[in-house]
Figure (tube, rainbow, N blue to C red):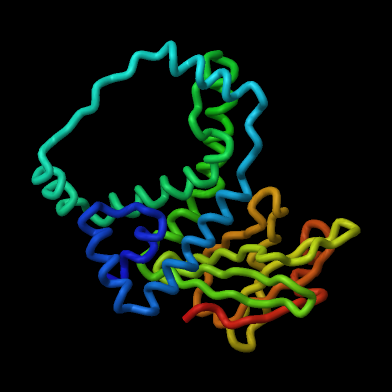
Length: 250
């Protein structure tokens, strides 16, 4: 049951799995914490991509509703639904979880789309494709059965949220309220293994773009550090001004 935490957090489980896992949460404190942290992470990803709809959007949607013929609902016996849910393979659950995160990321822009002009449709499709490409690795990470989360605090305020999967060999580092820096400076994440030299995981994107970075090839990384660098990251390939360091989730 523990492996359903990521999919449950993104509401990517069947009704039967949801009921079983809800009962499991009442007895498993670690899963309850894991679900809460993954839900908070997914919600922040969605909020980072949210945009205010144009003023005329509501009128366009209502107009399209009145002009569109509604199809009758399709139903099937409850026993058939349970039979189909019970057969759902693990890859289907993970795919649904990935779709859920992409939906969160694009929800502020595409919620209730009712576009009537071809140009608007093409623009919307382009934005959706970009959101899918940006968040697909994040979706797979959140849905991984062994996804683990941790939070680190910076002495200057705020900190980072880390999500790691050993099976995917992937880590995500997300800004959790780090103070904005003047002069074009950026935050850069670093992977540390024992006494080896730190390896850059990349520069954290601006908060408007999710405020995160995803890196593969974590190997046996045991610590993660965040430094303050000039725009573009450290030119020397080593941390310049280390802000904080924390152990990665076990």
